[in-house]
Length: 186
Image 1: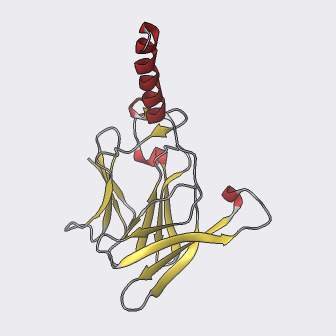
Image 2: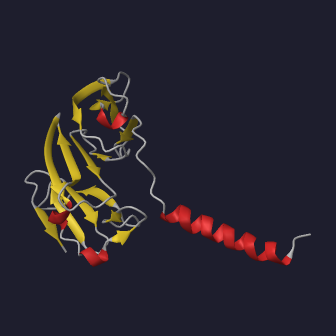
């Protein structure tokens, strides 16, 4: 039989564990990973390029390689990948563009990195998204700047042949033209 004190402490302990786990930030894993295009024809693979002499995985060099799948695997392009240790990204359905969007807000550092056909084409800092500081969602050690419930996606419109739509935490929809890199918000 549980004592009265245990009946009180057990639910409280479970609540604290759940809340703490929900707010805790996962440290970067620095694992190799793959991202597939939505049409499942292309995939991007991030791998270790050079371990150097350091033991710290954050100091290693990483490679981004895009492939076309099919009866034979075809490498389309490859370049150095600026890795922050978190897996993820979006790959366009034609395999030409790979975009990484950081969960974490950094005012003066890149939160969006765009690669195209083997070249780093554009990095966009947090301040360029003009998210009000009071709207950023605080976690244990970082701020979230985009809305995970709405996320981000590639889109095509009449005036934008290929764009990247990002929904920010302050309920704005930002469209980045992936040709001109012009940003428009609503």
